[in-house]
Length: 396
Ligand SMILES: *Cc1c(COP(=O)(O)O)cnc(C)c1O
Image (tube, rainbow, N blue to C red; front, top):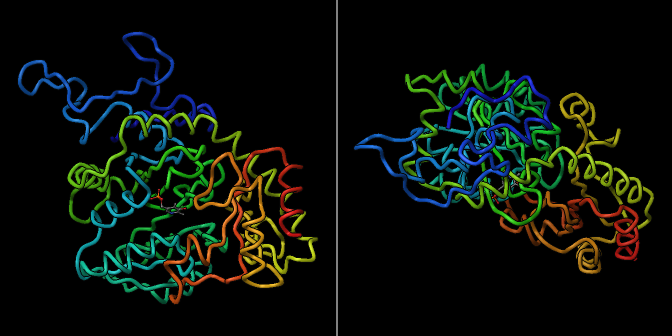
């Protein structure tokens, strides 16, 4: 729901705790109420209270989350969905049609690639894969007049490639396309793409925003510039609200509340995720079983300079390769105890996975295939010495 009152003057942590969440006017309740209701009493026919009519269209708990997310991303308006994929699908069907074209990263989230390659392509949406760590590769893939969206993930998953958001915003603008940034890995605490020229932010709130591995959700945030400027005379914010309601893949009130609660501690969680990830990187870098550590905070990482410019810190995701190949990588994943073997990321608990056989199994054989000796860590906020000891024993 568009709302201009995002407390933009307040600091990030203050907004994370308060934006969209004024104490309940009736009771003074400080915790945001969970409005478990599908419908709303009307004061006379059409007499809606604060516009609430039916909970697919709007629900106060979801509104609170949408306002908080918009505030944290420095955007005009937010939209909360049942999952990250639902947010992506709604956005793409709102801004693209048959015959249109999008540019997607060669290291995109597997589910994002599958949405383009296996679902939307059948509906006439063409896509090109580009290396988004190289703005010239994106520029070469763009088809001016036909490309509606340049899709960016940074850091990417699982290879932690870094895209230069400001440079790609220029490429997209020249082509008349929207720059969409999937900010799931960095979270708004570490990276603010709208300030760098992005038009739309995508989140899987399942990850760092929710932060406790207890909810699946997604979100879109639109920049003020993109929200109000749309070639067809209808604002992008209004168009997204229309599609959110028409397609109906909304976040329910309980799920909205879980993400809202997660956001309150985003800043302190991210700081600890970053602290622990840096220690894990230091440990892995010296280990004889490891052939390569992939982390944007390392000076030898090809995206390090750009990451330093556009992120406040380098995040909690770490990938590494095993000298002894695929079998060794799988064994490390299976031997870990404090690191839980599982997909997903961004929760307080540390997770370990083998992308080639797990999260990225669906992109095997495509341009998005990942090395078979790769292991991905989502470094949690447990006691760091326990994490290091676990890796030590898992690496044998
Ligand atoms: C998980 C994820 C998604 C998809 O979100 P869901 O909530 O699982 O639907 C999209 N992008 C990235 C970067 C992700 O990690």
